[in-house]
Image 1 (spheres, rainbow, N blue to C red):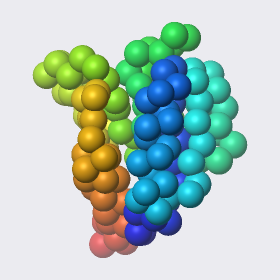
Image 2: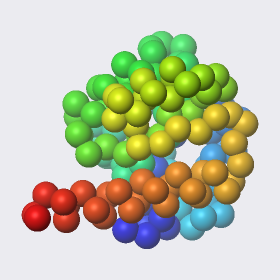
Image 3: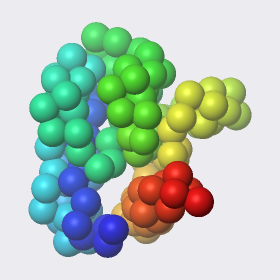
Length: 134
């Protein structure tokens, strides 16, 4: 899958972060972008659309991002979830990867980092069906 073909869900309570991500994604050619300001809206959006990539803030006002990651993986074990946080501790990174996140980015992040993690996730999406058929 090409990066520009994927759909993205941004779950973050800070509107400026969502806006920055949306603009960056648009510059990368991604037009299918949904946003959610909290975990409840995020899980509802994912249930309805199952976007290709989810950018998930680890700290949300209504829930813990790590528990939301687990819920997303229950809905779709192949979900591509990228954890975003201002607190990039080794423990946060390890816990997120162990819980199934395909990427981890620390705030503030650059457009280059967003592109890099999207490329990684889209390659992973393409590789998964091949791995199952072998």
